[in-house]
Image 1 (cartoon, rainbow, N blue to C red):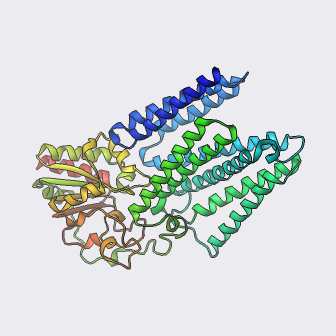
Image 2: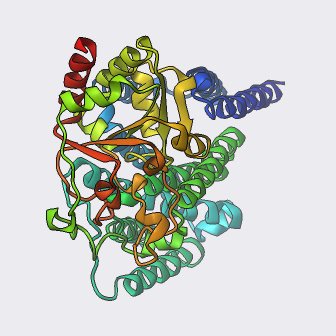
Image 3: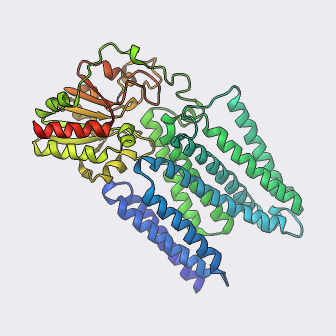
Length: 471
């Protein structure tokens, strides 16, 4: 009866996971969905612990307190601009935890077994699941560490490429398969199994590094989504190892949703996942654009920009990574409110890959209490640019570059963009004419209807607020 009750609670938790995931698909209900899914996981953890016969709560509660304390501290202290880094490293921790669970089974049923291989002791399905959990979890751990280092500026954000890189990755992958098969189905004896498991873990950690270093900053949203999927798949594999249905369900949900999001990100850039992972995008062109590439730059100040906005009846604000770096979301909201009080219609255009993680701009603007109804996705907002008086671009670059539409030689050709160039006036707030992650000239800057305002986004917005208020 106890076992049936546990499975019923697991089923209820799984239903809440699925419903919570559905709520996460809309900004307005995302907070509720997160709370619902988190509460369901808490209930599931408690029930799992109560099901374990004679378990010692000391280590469990110590882990919960330490991990929960670190998570709470990070949630409170990490700035919104650093959220991509935190998401990346947390993905890695999830993968690492799954790998450790699988390694514990190698230790108990391989190293600690009196005889036979791991497959003899836990079966073929359990052995394959344990190997997959180590492989996927370790790749997630090391790959997420590299993504964190790139985003945090601890290493270059440009692709790190060398001759024969893909061939080396293939050889490492083949070695990983060989060692995994040997340690799971051939090796016997404590020393052989222990060494084999550690070698397998080391190889997968290496391949996680070598597959992420060639990926540039422009593709970080895709990488984060993919690593998130990996962490779910690793948890799913660990669920098969420990024979826990809820862990299998939760891991499958994370893995599937992460893959779907990865596909959405790739479509938003009009590139395949293989091109993202192995193309080394940005490696040859990074830093190529400079001031000499432009010949029609019209530089304005905040006072001039305020005069343009003074008569605008419709304004679309396009947030980019420059907004995040300057932490200017609150100043952006203040300007939007002021323009609305003066009778203008204000909307925000969100490109799927703007920023450094999926939904980055939505999260930033939500933090500043920008109304959800004003946040419009690319497909919804693009038809409106032709009827818009002023577009204000805050630190966005490649996602508004018309070269994606009309230059077949451009590396971003075919990438869906925000059609800001169709508006009557376009104001671009940037620190300089430096290129975006793609490292190419932005043709928008030379358009006749484009006005450049150089400076920190937060400072410029504050000056615009002051000028508009005084007009």
